[in-house]
Image 1 (tube, rainbow, N blue to C red):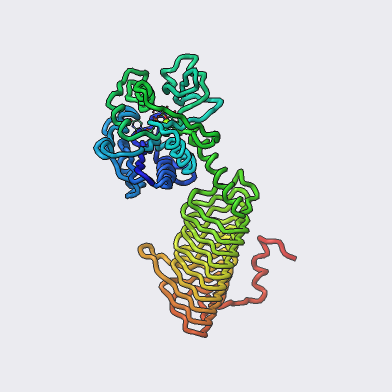
Image 2 (cartoon, helix red, strand yellow; image 1 turned 135 degrees about the vertical axis):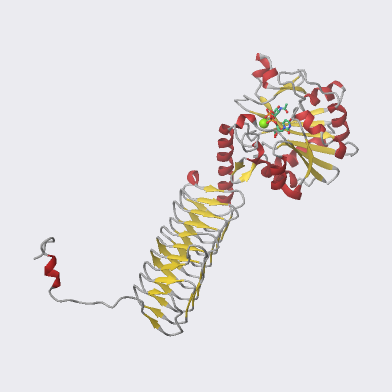
Length: 460
Ligand code: UD1
Ligand code: MG
């Protein structure tokens, strides 16, 4: 691309959010607003992206890392003042500069590209991205002259009653001729209701100097939302969710109740996967093809390979290999892996454990810090005793071993290939290959003794 630069404004505190967290770091669909903006801006291929930071500068930098350069706005004296902070980096550059706010997470790269195109085609000095809305409350209003040309932008607090009725608003996105931008910025003043240097005043200044000022209006009302408070944050989340769900459905994912399905921005899903309602898919989750995720499941930072099934379960930081299934009511905690076609069922918790191909743990089991070979059967109620109050201890169970129900596997321990642990055992010593381990009290039967208890229990 020619000489394109981009400035993201992200120095404001976000007073209206009433939050300890800096505004642009609030999340929409699991990703901070400023990250959404950066990702879209990056797709327009600018030579350099500069983010203006101030409040929470370190936190913002920590999120965007080297994807952006930074300038510090020490005092937040307005959007015009914020842009001015980039002067040292940009004012000797020829070309166009995109300015966008860090609080407009819904704007798409396509719209920004269209805006650039419009700007270049019209040989404009500045092009403002505008939108029509029935409720313009809170936004700057676009004031046009009799021939329909944009003259200036007036902020809500400075607007006359008549101006306030205008339904065309400023989205806070502009493309400027770089040189003219910095010339105009030095002419800004603070004679307005907020006592701030408004970037929006640059429009009027350029117009007065006889420069070509253009507007490009977007039709989609779902893009321009600027998030200044929690109400708008909720709205942005809801619009983003709709957009994400729509794109997955277009890519051949079945969502049975999209209105209650929350899929965060970075989640990937393969074709013919079916997702029921009330499902949350979060973080860096990757889901394969032909997967079924039943209602009330939450999957965070996990990989579900093709043909896996999850029923009413919580899966965090874990992997399900092809054909594996979890639930109902299973909980996979971080660093767990279910091998190919492995199954964990009702009320099974797995933590930092690898279950090999075809392993079955159908009911009421806790597997922690373990490595389990292929085709191992864990009976109902098997507990891995992995913690001595100080250390986490590892258990290793080799292929084809059979662990009877209600057994305690006391780590550290090794149970060999094909070994059998009898039901109800507590095993705390290694069990060699092919051996049977019994670790339970021998049963005693005392004939007639039951009658002794008849004085307090009914019997026939
Ligand atoms: C701004 C526009 C308004 C537009 C709206 C679109 C101005 C004067 N007003 O209003 O016309 O309709 O966006 O959403 O520009 N920021 C700084 N430093 C500052 C002040 C703000 O970096 O000194 C950053 C904020 O972090 C934010 C962005 O600039 O990301 C916009 O500021 P905000 O206070 O949200 O402006 P709005 O009132 O929304
Ligand atoms: Mg705003």
